Length: 373
Image (cartoon, rainbow, N blue to C red; front, side, top):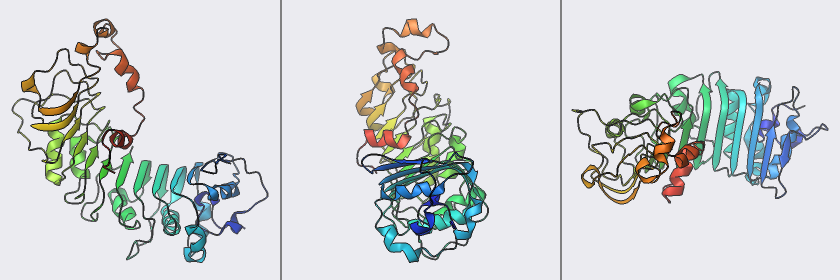
C-alpha cells in the first residue's frame, strides 16, 4: 500500500509507488529530459509519477487537492533510500496546485537533501499546519534557485525563516511572487550569504513601505540584483530610501512595469548605492525623467514610457548606455495612437510588448546583465 504520494516522488522507495493503473496523468518527452504531471482526476493515479524519476526537469500539479491523507509516510527515514535519490538526474522541480501540510513539506525537503536538485519552484500551494522543529543543521537540498509563486503559509511572517532552516547554504536566486506576506520576521531570519538576486516581482501590493519590511537589514550582503517589476513602487527615490535602510548594494535595480511618478518637490534626497550601475525604468508610465537618479550609471533603460521630447543632458545621469525606444517622441505613429484612450499614450510596439509581462523579472535580469546569478 502506498504510504505517501508519488507526487512527492522521493519520500519512499519506488517499489511502494507502483500500481497497475493508467499512467495517463504524467508524460515524459522523447529525450527523457522533461516530465509533466497533472493530477486532476477525482481519484488520481499517483503511481504515474514514477516514470518522472528518469527526467532532469519535473513539473507536478496536484489538481488543487489536499495531500493530508499522505501524512503517514512523512516520518519515513530518507537515509534508507539515499543512494537511489543521489542517482536521480533531477535538477529542476516544480510542485504546484495543492494543499500541503507543513510536516509533509519538511519531509519532502529532507528527502531532496540527498538529491542533486538545483532549482525548486513551489506554485499555487497552501501550506497548512505547523512545521516540526528545524534541525540543528540543514538537511534539505543545496539549491541555487528557489521560486515561490502564490504560496500561502500558516506560520505568517515567520515562513521564510522557517523554510530557510531546512535549506543548505548557497542559495543564489530567490524569487517570491504573489506572496500573501512579505513582512518577514527579520529577527529570526538568518543571513543569505551567497544570494545575488532577489526578485520580488508581481507583488503589486508591496510598495515602498512593504519593501522596507522585506529587505531585512544586513541579511543580503552579496546582493547584486534587486528585481521589483510590477511591485507597487511609486518613486525611485522611495526605493532608494528602502535600500539605504537595509544596507543593500545591488549593481542592478529593475523597477520596470510599475506606475512610477516624479519625486515630490521638497522630498529629501537619497544617497544611492555606490555599486549601482544599471537601472531599469521601462514600462513605467513616466512623462519625464525622474529627478534624484544616481549621478552615474552604465545602463539606464527608459523604454516604453510617455516621454514626449528627448531628455536634456542636465536631466540625465552620466550614462554609457541609454535606451529610449518606444517613447512617443521617437515614434511617428504615437500621436495617432494616443487618440485611443485605452492605450493612454503608449506607443503601439510597447502596448504589444506589455502583453508579455509574464516573463519573470529574474529571467529579464539574467538576459540583460550576464553573470549576476
